[in-house]
Image (cartoon, rainbow, N blue to C red; front, side, top):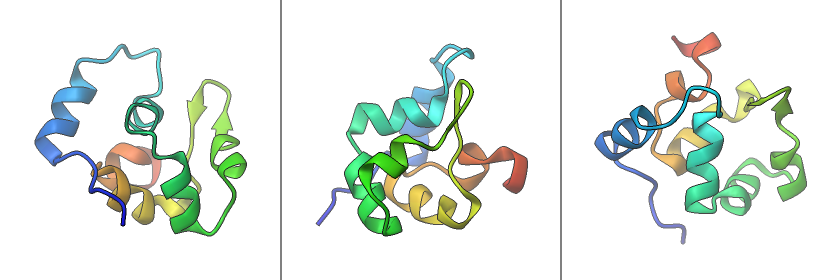
Length: 85
């Protein structure tokens, strides 16, 4: 069983301290080593999760945002503000 992600307070504190040039969601995923748990939850390969890059951003496909939110502890509006904000 996967350990729950960051609490909302931890996520906000962590994200607020990061530079704007780096993708914040990707940094949380990297820090917590969540590529495999996310891949398993979404039914895709780890490589597919790594391939969610668009330019300098890591963009989770809309159909997986809720699962990624559950695993990372980040709200959907942080993961895909273009859809949920």
